[in-house]
Image 1 (cartoon, rainbow, N blue to C red):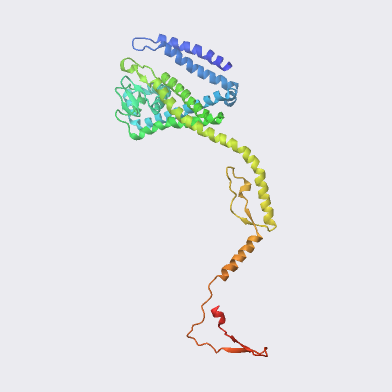
Image 2: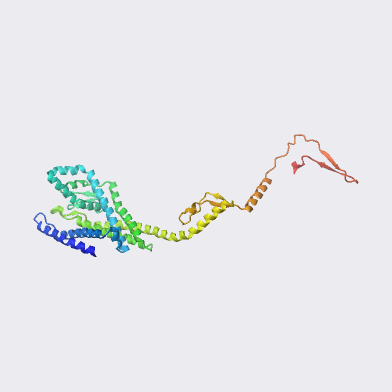
Length: 394
């Protein structure tokens, strides 16, 4: 509450002073809008005064922690998405100035302001730099902006007429179709939404799987509102006739940013929230399984030391659990005497089943057979014929 009071106390006199200057500066050529001057200067001074007061109270992290968790998540997510868009807009402005530096320098030479006039011209363009950055991120968002009535500078095409002789406007692209590769800038709002969604989910995870995408999409809506306000403040007439329409359309920019950032933030917030919930759900299982796995690893090491096991370099299967030191231990292979005897019996059976070598060639003469008579029987012996090659016919 103190921060809000300080911001209002600083913004109110600043806005009144700006309105008074706008009223005094009215003439036949220049006719500023009093209401717009009051509102824009009040918001600008309120924002600057509130941030300065909050910074004097304590660090930013302490101030953010004073907010409720959901509000803090939305605030940080919106700030992240807006910051990404502004940085991308600044990069686009600098790139356009570098690529069209010849036209910028030519316009400066045509004006020939001199030394003092040149310094004032540079100062004026620096003051318009924030407007140019907002116009650039309006271009990135898709709707683009206008430099006069019936003009448009957008990724879908450029249509320009006579523009003011401000050197920085020489960086504008020429009228006609835009190269196809320039359409890639439309991916920036989706990237900003993805980063914002991850931020929202990490600051305030949702217990239900369906709530996280909704909070991500809500972040896109708040980002769209901020973008619409910035677009409204950056535009406005800078003259009469054609120059009465300058800048982006606030509602078009707000709608485009809300949809692009919201969709990407919803998807990324849902995925991030799912991963966080699964990680939290695995922690009790990991904690409960750790003693069991450590005991198994200790038994394995003891068995290998007494000779009951042999080492196997294969790691233990991790299942759904995270890898620990016990998973990298070598698996013991316990000896089984019954399996050893069973393997020996199988080996002997296979050896007996092997084909025996063939007998001698019949063409080779054999030695004569020798008869052996058993004389143990007195009544009449019987003759036993012993064939030395009888084993060949078994």
